[in-house]
Picture 1 (tube, helix red, strand yellow):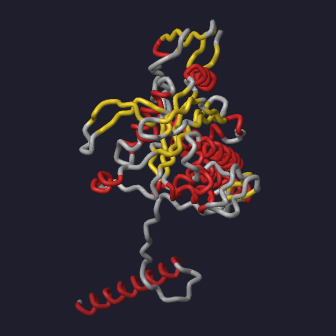
Picture 2: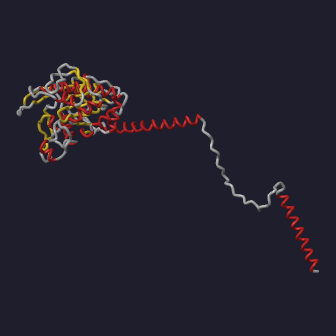
Length: 396
């Protein structure tokens, strides 16, 4: 019985092995390799990565154009932003006519003027900048130094009137010796009222920086019938040669004989001023007679005309020139002309012309004061008519 059972078990095992062999052959009929067990399949991501396509030449060109556009437009956007800021900060002042001449009717503090049967409207497109040349080599705001030597005087005064609608620049040469009602201060900085002083001394009643400039602005505005002066810039002696050489020198035909200070500056000679020659040319003067400063003012007008012409010509290809010039003299100048202001003005005057016809002089009666110094008293009628010509528009 046991043998029969063992035999049955043996036959059953043999049958099972034969079935297993047959099943293996059915699963891998072409494989000659031994069975290594069932393969474990890895799960595949449902989202397959897309194969990268090569960009066409057209697509590459399009991308390059976009990059170039960004490179070009960003600086342009910056300039436009500065332009807008500059425009907004240049027209803060309002006309406040402080005096007038006989026969003049003033409305709204001088916004409208009636003179000789005609009506004149103040031109609000004009912004004014006072430029001052100070008789100091450098800025020194030390209190002890200021008490001993003072802040200096504004030897040269030019008021630039820029018509932002037309780009025209008008320049008024204001004599330093005009008698004006100047705000005065004692040695401790305490206000001591307005006093009749030479205009150049307004700068002296200050700190050699912003306070001095603002006091000069106030005094000049009073002389010019309350014309609003929106901006100012003072430069020291050291800045003259720097600005001169930055434009490659300035060519002039020498007015007067200055050979006592520079042998090359013979009357009538054609000279390109370089380095210290520029300062010598615009500052040298005799102290006698009383009108000796008139000859110096002629040279200053001539020099500024030639300098402006050269600078405006270079600006046609480089609107950043004014900013570059300002940076060159930053340590020897005081100004409230910001980069946005300068950018706005540069875009307005670029391409404009400038000649001696753009410069106006103030006719004055010259007298000797009690202290022996020259005192200039303007012809008020002629001065008022000049103000109308430069700052107003005739409307009837």
